[in-house]
Image (cartoon, rainbow, N blue to C red; front, side, top):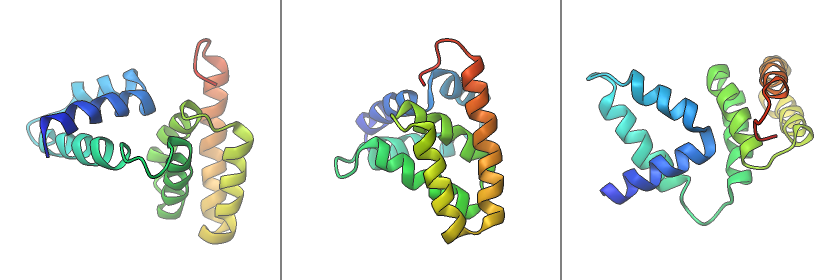
Length: 131
């Protein structure tokens, strides 16, 4: 993959996850994690999230569902924020999590609702956050 993918990946990653998260990730990069950070920036963000076949709202819906299914609650919180940035409403996020209860299990959805509620409450307390 090219440097163009890296640049596009950083731009999309910042647009979706926010400068604060991306800056933190960059600051925490070590010799051990540098190749992984490069990989996810080029491939996940510079290739997959950049593809024209799905809009970012749809990609956020899929990402939330996949994270609930895998029980990746730390990542789920990050992507609830991203979903809001990508234009999903709190109600739509709730519908996604409710759908996950049927297909991923009630305990997984219960935990996901708790994470989403914390994130959404935090966003309500932060003036200027995209909501």
